[in-house]
Image 1 (cartoon, chains in turn green, brown, cyan, red):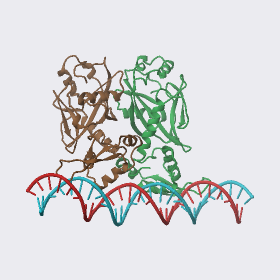
Image 2 (tube, each protein chain N blue to C red):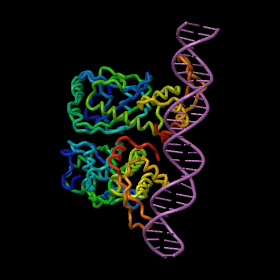
Image 3 (spheres, each protein chain N blue to C red):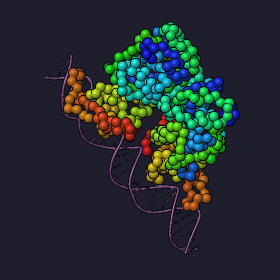
Image 4 (cartoon, each protein chain N blue to C red):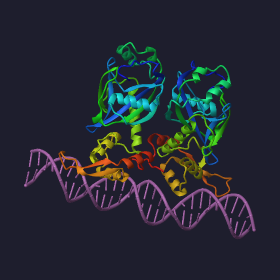
Amino acid sequence: MDKTAPINSTEYMNHISIDCVIFGFSNNELKVLLLHLKYSKEYSLPGGFLKYDETLEQAAQRIVKERTGLDNLFLKQFKVFSDPERSKSNKALLDADMAGTDHDKSFFDKRFISVGFYALVDFRKVKPTPDLFSDHCDWVSLNTDVSMLLDHKQIIEKAISTLRLQLSQQPIGLKLLPRKFTMPELQKLYETILGRDLDRRNFQRKMLNYNILDKLKERKTGGAHKSPYLYSFNMERYQKALEDGLSGIW
Amino acid sequence: MDKTAPINSTEYMNHISIDCVIFGFSNNELKVLLLHLKYSKEYSLPGGFLKYDETLEQAAQRIVKERTGLDNLFLKQFKVFSDPERSKSNKALLDADMAGTDHDKSFFDKRFISVGFYALVDFRKVKPTPDLFSDHCDWVSLNTDVSMLLDHKQIIEKAISTLRLQLSQQPIGLKLLPRKFTMPELQKLYETILGRDLDRRNFQRKMLNYNILDKLKERKTGGAHKSPYLYSFNMERYQKALEDGLSGIW
DNA sequence: TAATAATGTGTCGCAATGACACTAGGAATA
DNA sequence: TATTCCTAGTGTCATTGCGACACATTATTA
């Protein structure tokens, strides 16, 4: 949602909304970027609506860009949420009331089906930006239990389980990690997404077998112990693996 | 779509449609149930719209039931198609004009985003039933190239590729095969979906290892050669495998 | 009754995987 | 400066999974 433009059915299609689960990785934790609603004091997923000349994918890009500043995302449709009850007791409505009078109340006062997208972003590059209805943004760890708008908690759950499945079929990490990273860092990412520990040596063997990593000459210094090698993704092979899929399952 | 009720925005939500790719298996071929449009003479996917009190899943169930007579389906959301251009040059509009005057032309004359579902059904149980806009239904083999409405060809493509992916993660066949079936029949189904041949012996080993089959005492007689054993799915283990997922990848 | 064709069953070798042990190096401490 | 501690790098071994393949069995039909 644009910070200034009013929201109404002149610009946006009725009944269709988009919710984005934006994953970031920091401090060895998988986190989700959430908005804190001014009025209801609940957390909400960054979301928005579909313009008349956009595809859903373009709209999701736009929405994530407005909240993070980032372009060129890893972005994936994962499910449509269509329970007729889901937009009842829509506290966002209250927030819409609070945020100004230019918005079309009748626009919000309708049933919405919401298309869920998840995005993987580089935590450090994100400039979290609240929207009209929120006073601030937080990166919230998945383990933290916070009060959330509507069915947003379930949406996050579904996003994670989808991400886990996808993890066995395609490489992940390009958008979540810095350009140069160590094997232990990559492993932590996998462990975090999968929610369980992996064997250090077996992980390395398998990952290297995928043949999507370039081992760099440099090592990561400044750590408290033996300095690990740095790796980067081999873009060509990474892309190919994205298309063709990986082989194994963790 | 009901055969009698007019279609308008009193009953159905604007902008949202549903397209169902209904897969059936016969003659060792994977087929899709298509409607033949009266006016445009093109084929179309069975589709419909979302009522105000339905979930998308319920609507898809209803739509498939109207076209096949079947209940209790294997039904899965696989993608939303949202290209703004997709519903332009909507020849269904012409068909709507032809089919009667009760329909609300302005309802059709809007942009639609369409939620794709695929269904797996037992070919022999289906009673194909055309809708208002079609003169008949056909089971069309995937290899057959027919002229299709809008982006329906792409929708089918996406349904198949999704089905292929899912094949490695969950058991399939319960809804596509008769209750008792032979190993060669099951194999043919897999080969058809995957589009390639599999080794008879390796297939059997792997399938039995999944531990979702009950080997029956009976054999299938009447065939031209050695009579194969009959199997049926062990419902308990099949359900469990649906939830937990299978291990390997083909 | 023999030929044909499809099914049932088993084996062999390679590659992937999980479990595990030892060595190397950097920082902190004594 | 040497010792300790922690982490990273590398290798081995046994088991399993899987692809490729051979042979025996059984029903039909010529």
